[in-house]
Length: 338
Figure 1 (cartoon, rainbow, N blue to C red):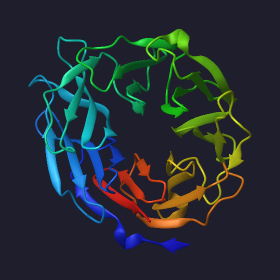
Figure 2: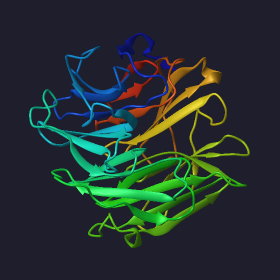
Figure 3: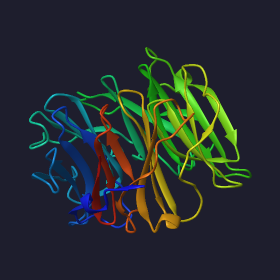
């Protein structure tokens, strides 16, 4: 097992239990966002140079109202060169459209005033073409989404895909279409995935149709067309790939497992390769990376990215050369991907 243990680096103080997100610039730089416990909360935008080990520039975004708290999982996207947008949920003022979008035209150094884009809290978010799609987890109202253009100037409505209560949620995409996943914590736990093809209105519930139901499996993460689940009976982590119609056969992810004492995420890079990142109690709470270039038929050896004993939530971004960053939290740690 190759070890890059000395490379992970402390980024900044992070509110306990609050996840963040990361995006890659074409130059190789990284943009990490996470909320910090300053006053009612602020969103820290951290620019990291390609070989940097800390923020080369920091910007702190504040909610639209002084009484608002930051809330949920912020999202960060780079629609084009120097164009960075940050999505942040806030709570709890009179205006119901409490999720806001901040826009930067200089690579994330300065941002315009926040624009209200929706009333749904932010649990997961995805950039699909020129549209930002987001959903909320632990939602008794069902699997709901909001979609809006990156240049939005007003809120978009909330669309309900299915009324079944959503626990864990994740978003992906396939050739310009949107994938929305959830699990339902019944007996047994079941993962469901819905798909809206390119050209459909992502802001209308009827645009989505069911493409997967996996009983006995909890949802771990999605990225691109890659779906990661945990089989409840034995903790086997399974990868499936979407083909535009359905998900293919499951493949067990080598070198990792699910269950208690584990935290996992997945990232499909632009070349189509899939990278799984896992923090395992059985690996002394180190961050491991395994990857596949053939949809899970075979896997790389595990790479040790460093001690991650303080990390709970993971967000990853990897380029087509297999390089990128995993963002951990409690506090904020960056794990460069070789």
